[in-house]
Amino acid sequence: VGASAYSPVALPTPPLWVETGDAMPGNRDCVLQAGLIDCDGPVIQAASEAAPGQGVRRMGEDMAANRPPTFEGKTIGVADLLVARKVGLSQLAVRIPCVRAIDVSAESHETFSLRLVVESLGASGASIAEIEAVERDATAIAAALDGESCDLLLLIGGTGDGCADVTAEALARRRVLLAHGIALRPGGTTAIGRLGKTPIVALAGSPQQAFAGFLALVQPVLDRLSGRSERSGIILPLSRKISSAVGLCEIVLLAKERDVWTPLAVGDFSLDAMRLADAWLAVPDDSEGYAAGTPVAAVPLRNF
Image 1: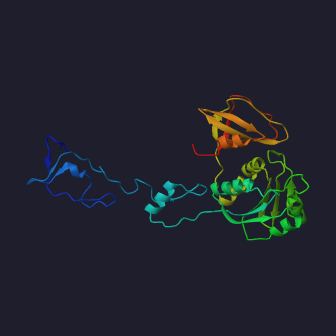
Image 2 (image 1 turned 90 degrees about the vertical axis):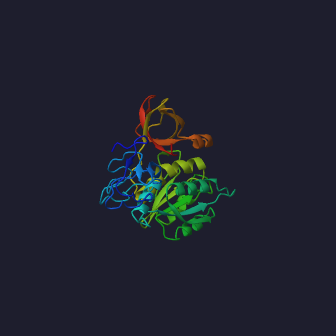
């Protein structure tokens, strides 16, 4: 107590050297930086005062006893991994949904929607067991349903009203179709089903339709399979009103501008709106929308 560079204090016993992370010796209660200790003369001196506990992490200070390193329903982050390693864990038990994807290829063999869905699956924490491409033939699609075991089966393409759109027909043949053509915009041609205990979602081949179907239907299934807690939205007022049709659940893409949500697209997405969107929300089918200035909760599409 009272030591300073102008009035150093002689230490009665030599200090012990400790490295960061070392356990404190039993008869010591504080740490001084090495530059504040003068060991050159006949007497060891401290050039700064130190209070008990200075430079020391006490037991239970970082985390209380019996507190779990991770919490159910919470996404594992880098800080969670740090804590797990610090307490000596080399592994963590996590739920990773296993997904099979069936690409119902169009004649152009474009894979834009398939790639969008696969990348969205990865961003949502799912693992992809298999990606299989099949022709737009109801028999071939029906046969492709019997593949590797998975938690969720996705089909991409062939859900529309075109003469070659036979995905829903294939699901109906297998008696696994629950609904085709839902009150969702965009994404109204999406089909849903169940093969045994495995949920099935058939997304449209259009990237915009597939993206909306993924947000509204696939992501909630993945969250349930992974045990994730409900995604919390960021509440901000709208910069302008959102008009929506009653009877349809319309997906809205939003950009975060200062402290407001600015609608970019309602029920019909451009590629530019998809690229610029920071968050999304679903307007319920019994709502006509929201007035300008209304606080709404939007689910982030990216980290802020």
